[in-house]
Amino acid sequence: MTGGRILILGKTGHNFAAGMSGGIAYIYDLDPKKCNTDLVKLETLTDEAEKEAVKAMLENTSATPTAT
Figure (cartoon, rainbow, N blue to C red):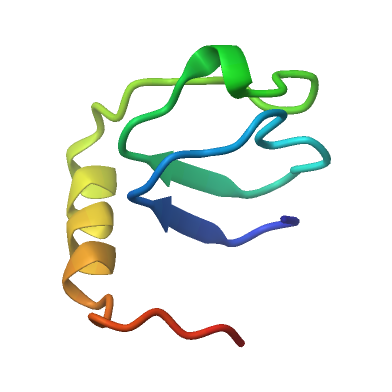
């Protein structure tokens, strides 16, 4: 992913974030041992505006995921 934001509610696989740059991934239940931290850093969500953005993303998700 280059730029953009994604909200992940499920599990991530081994080597998550390999090649990711310039974007933000909000992950509900991340296993840090499975994350490739070469190009990303892990942070706890503390900013209120970002929390509201994640809440809006969650509220806008559909019951049936679709690929684009």
